[in-house]
Image (cartoon, rainbow, N blue to C red):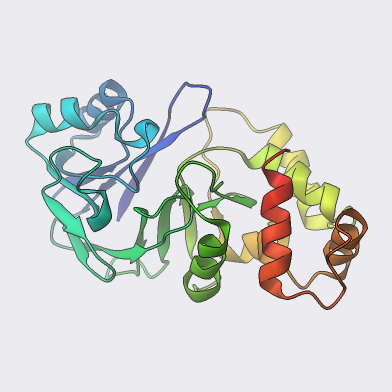
Amino acid sequence: MLVEQIAVNNSLRNYMYLIACPDTLEAVAIDPLDHASTLARAAELGWSIRGVINTHEHHDHIGGNEPVIHATGATLYAHYKAVDVIDNVDVALRADDVVQVGTSVQLRALDTPGHTFCHTCLLFKGNQHEETPALFCGDTLFNAGVGNCHNGGDPKVMYATFAEQIFALSDTTRIYPGHDYIINNLLFTLDREPSNEAAKSLLAAMQQWTSDRHFISNLAMERSVNSFFRLDSEEIRSVLCEQFEDLTSIASAEEVFLKLRELRNHW
């Protein structure tokens, strides 16, 4: 699988993706907000865009659909609940549906509500070219954080998505999120867990990172630096108990997740 991550020069720090089959150079574009950059980069690479996939219905993920499809004739894929809010969806994706890219790349749709109720992530499980899986996770999972839920979502549903699907993915799964919020997310982790050496080290590296380089984490890294994966951390629980009188040291993982999400809303 060939992957091109494209950063959008906007205040929301969006990421778009081109995913291509190495055998045929047929490609799909995920959330191509900046249609001009998407089309130009595909042309530079010699990739033919055959599909557009929207992870969810927010404008900063669907805003480039029409010009990309007009230029390429691509098929539009989106969550089956999004067909009434995203124009001209050709294929409504349900859990475990497969998007075929060329001859050798298969992306499996995950039904991942929480950020919205029309959210899908795409999981590449590996093939004969490579064994390392990858998750294109829109606004469900970010580097060192998770998506918000205040524009059509629900934090309890978000927790269920993580508990039932995301947490179970293998450590080697590469993460391709819909936005770059990594520095703020790491600062949030360290405010909850000041002794987290992995987060300190990664923050220092990210503060020196240049915009022309692509940073790709995996789930092993997320388990070490993402506070939403560290729900059993005694330090995180202790800090939260100081901030929330209704939280006790025996709180459930869901309760810890929800308090973290509440705090992150105002961070």
